[in-house]
Length: 324
Image (cartoon, rainbow, N blue to C red):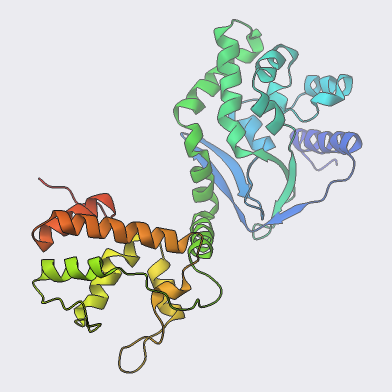
């Protein structure tokens, strides 16, 4: 203890006091941690295994230029119900502005003890990242109501500065970028989409593509259409992938092709649509086919049809083209 700085000793004492009030807490281990940069301020943050984005409670206090003093811990001792409040907003004069925001009041009750694996760091307390701008708003509303104490005016100035560099809708994306969770988030989102669109088992074959689809495509391409024949030009498979499957949802075409690979002659044993789910995949396919047929019927040439299709149902991952 003698080798520690006054701030470190105070921090340990604070954690000990919190432990007495809350009891032992389990440390949550996470692989994703970093520093959230807002203007000139950096706040430690992390993404927990369940996807919860948190910011360090200590970092939150420092972001406002505050510190955890004795008055904060005296307030907690007098009112244990306020133990979930970060030090900077535990003052009595701020409680009405917190109580007026039920979603903030509820979020402040969630406190996470976490540790980042790869950093080898000590455990830290964190709170949900989405409360950051809401805490800023508490100070700004208190300032507008002339309810701040002189010692809190600097906190309000800091809140104003932080609010300018932080939009509430962007806090999750900022945390993901700072912690490296962005790529994982995208993979998880893609997996959820594929689970909705693509089934676990191959369904029995049913006609999904109406004759009108082929008739209109053939017309626009200048090919002769025979309603009695099922033979299609080699290019038809590429056209179907382009105008239909690439526009259903991200990653769907790649996954369907993986599940139904081509043989040596370039043919697939099953139809791609046999893997689509009946509740999400098939309805999406039907909507896209209807859209394609309607647009094809309304146009006289292929290029005009494709321009219209790119506007109403662009390929996922493509940049929407603009006419100049």
